[in-house]
Image 1: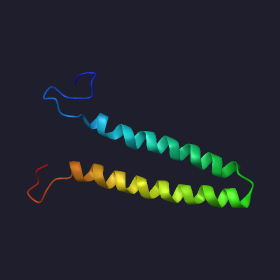
Image 2: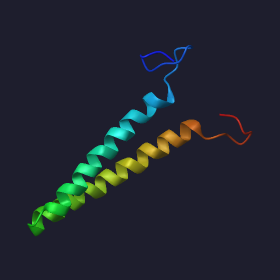
Image 3: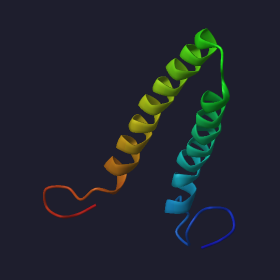
Image 4: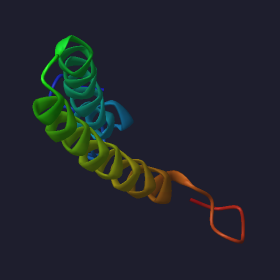
Length: 77
């Protein structure tokens, strides 16, 4: 594997595919910490809505990643 995020055949590595999800999870952690600290109910509610949207984005990202690596009906990727 080279430092470019591709394997010897030039394919994107699993690590490179997972980086956007990892970054998204770090952003969600920051959002959770902000929600915990927010005292204003209206701001808290707005942050919760943002969190829900972020969770939905996470589910779509995971669905996309799993689809790329799940075996097909013949057991092949």
